[in-house]
Length: 109
Image (cartoon, rainbow, N blue to C red; front, side, top):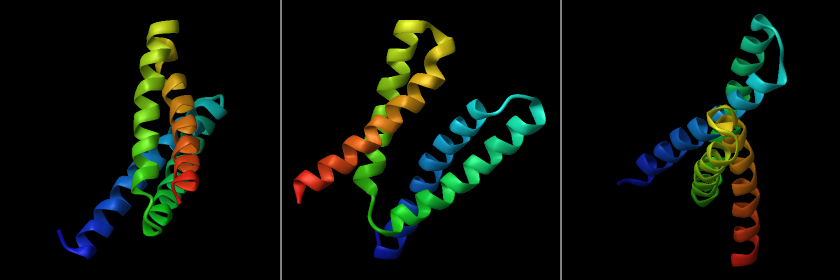
């Protein structure tokens, strides 16, 4: 894969991962249908933009930590609280996975 193709795929992955996290956070921050929709779309837009910027700086390992944390958090949420807690567990796991990715990157240098 060419260097430009890798950058574009990283930007797409970053926008998708962080955009979904932003949409999830926006969904839980608001009450009422109209406000919830606005927060969800706003969170997705801001998160997507942040994901593209992070990918431009080479954050592939960071995204992988977020995805792994989200999956583990969702599974733990389902195990402990049922399907109702899966989204909250995924959001929390993704956050912890992101922090772990940053720390692993700082230690690895």
